[in-house]
Image (cartoon, rainbow over the protein chains, first blue to last red):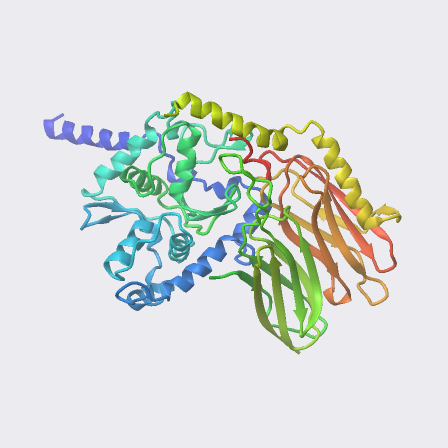
Length: 258
Length: 106
Length: 156
């Protein structure tokens, strides 16, 4: 084998290494399939899905003028049903100005501060959740499509490293449950593969709509690790990795989960 | 902001039984939860839901803290005549919400 | 300056009385059963509660006690002379026995309700239908609750 071939072979092994332990596309299952029949029905019917209350609020906010620029989202983006179609499926996405990926909530705030000249919406506020839910809803049914290039690869790797790293007082890595033991039970609950297909979602435990970061904070507290602050780069790296790991799965926003 | 959402057919045949689905945005605070320092969070719930059809009440619900947050109420009514269905929610601390929907009956 | 130890002791002392009332009531089960009986008497009075005509639907094993889908349907022609006047739902182990009451008449077409309820514990739920002839009919269903509602955010 020539040096060139050997290097190519090693490179393949390395990139395959990043994928080792990942769930193959044909085996990816949404948490939707683990829920009872009635909870699934709650998600499927817009008339009974509580998440739709936030989506409708988002629709109102989309058309509301804001900030010193006195401009609504609709002024630049028109009808969200067309302009926002497919957007949530490719977020987190690389932001050239910030030189790093940003999630959908951050993207909305970049528009608010930069274009509308309005103050940013607080993380997990009703307004930001409503707008994010409304935008993500426009991608419902579309496959997640995170494209990684040379710029975003380091952040994907950071997220992957965090997913596979043992942490917290319980010294558990995300992968130990969600890659190695999905489908088995932990304290009576079925362990999902943990794909963020339906965020922001209505969680019965919260009795309200919440973001992926809120859910991840719950996970981190659950393994007795220090949760990152909302919008922290560690979070966005992890979100990027989780969405990439779920590539090909359909967006379900606004999902319902226990 | 959307305080409530109602879903029902826009038209029906006279005498047809139609299904109405309603969702109200409300945390339905039970009054049994406590803060991190042990104080009771006071009860704050929707107490009553009513549906009137051209002014006549056709369905009324008394809600208690055991009703889940963002209450869903699904019920039926007979499509008797063309007109307006009016839905009202009343609760603690002066909470009220109203939605109306037209119905065409042939 | 309060030391960390003094602060923790003071906080624990402040927490315990209120929390004790809420969490460690030795008569809780008996008290709730009595409240359930009182609520039942309040509805049925001296009348007889019969089984039948009512169909109460609840998932046998639920995802989360905070939001349990519940449906009640009563067999009735819903005519002016023979209809359901009210539907009541009660529980035995929730902090309060009353869940929901529906007031309806022939205009409803069908005597039905679908909603979502909170259940604090594995228990049985009772649905009562009050008919226009003054009779009371009922159905009950058992539910297993693994993540309970109402009282999860108790001590810490």
